[in-house]
Length: 89
Image (cartoon, rainbow, N blue to C red; front, side):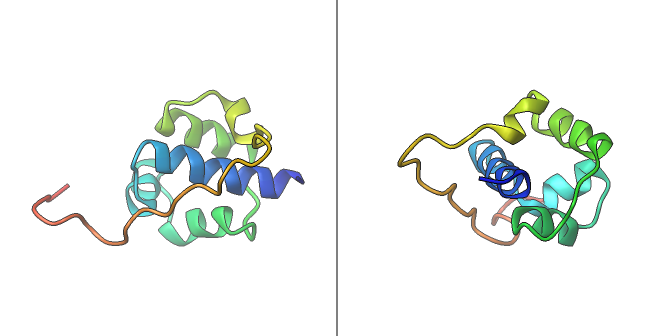
């Protein structure tokens, strides 16, 4: 897997494991949600500085963005879209 694909896979994996929406990650990272989507869909190109910021927000070491998936590992699940009902934050 190439670097951009690894970043996309692992960004979604980390976000999914922590149950953080793209909207929440974007807000906490101070970027537009569309940029998070671009990264997860292998269309964006993040700087090292921004990867540092994402790692801090996701509470993950930087190397986690470049971890090779295990053989047979399933693609990280998508989280439901939109704001969960009954929550205001």
